[in-house]
Amino acid sequence: MTNERIDAILGTEEELVPSSGFLAAVMERVREEAAAPPPIPFPWKRAVPGFVVAAGVMGWGAVEFVRFIGPAMATVKLSQPHMSAALARPLEQAGWVAAALAVSLVSYLVSRRFAG
Amino acid sequence: MSTTAQNPAGTRIDADDADVSRVLGGDIAAFEGIVRRWQGPLLNMAWRYCRDRGRAEELAQEALVRAWRGLSSWRRESSFSTWLFALAANVYRNDLKRFPAVNLPIEDIAEPSRAADQQSRIEEKSRNEVVRRAVLALPRRYREPVVLFYFHEKDVAAAAQTMGLAEGTVKARLSRARELLRRRFPQLEKEHLDMAVASTEKGGLE
Image 1 (cartoon, rainbow over the protein chains, first blue to last red):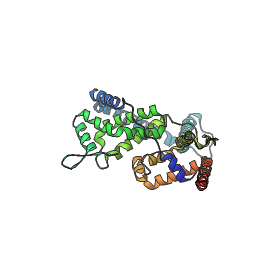
Image 2 (cartoon, chains in turn red, brown):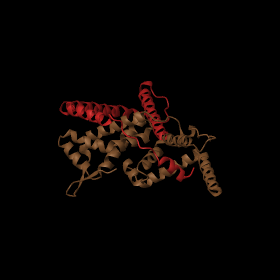
Image 3 (cartoon, rainbow over the protein chains, first blue to last red):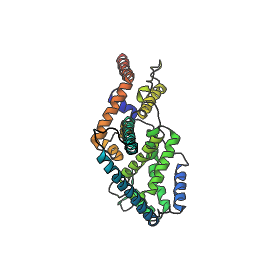
Image 4 (cartoon, helix red, strand yellow):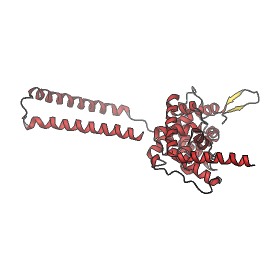
């Protein structure tokens, strides 16, 4: 099939005419929306303290995590493969979380690529 | 598709611009003029996206309601039609992402068979419709440039503006889309050539 044939087929379409009630239906929806009360604005003043507290807690958690992991990493030596169970568990879990995130990212990118 | 009106003094008045100003000033009824002018183009554009009459009306209606909600975001830098078509394309694209019009890949679309009475107009229309529907089975990145290119009467610049893409990108995607269609429907070209030869021979005999 040549481009001319494709143009001939896709370039000629019969014009659709809107149904008789189309205009009325659109205007009815528009009037309904106009009559509806305005949306309630997000209560930023009340939410901001909550966000600040949440950010503080997360920051504190991050600091504590680093404080805990930092010395633990310093004591880990390559020549000492046998770590204590208490020390190995959080590191192992962090590794799994990182692996899961990486797999999720890869599957997201692959699915997007396939979806075009 | 005229968007302008002529007043008695001969000054061109942009009907859309005037109606938008009135709507933004609180005159909801002025939106009716916009709907009257654009319902046809938006319906036909939606039809090309889904090829389902009922769904096309719903999509066009949704696009017009969204346009009403977002009228203040039209900054008058581009024409009203450019803004409206881009908004509508966004509505249609998002809806079709959730509920695709065709779930088959283009490789699975059957090529129309060559009927004995191939010259009949019904057969011809039916075959053409298969090709039009096959456009909906193209990968998304190639489908929309085809839909909008032919909707805008083969105007690459207009299609690119509606999609918010560079013209070069649209041209490249169109080329790839045509290649996919050509590969999928080789028989149609053969029939086309056969018909051309037959009509030439018939003309020669007469």
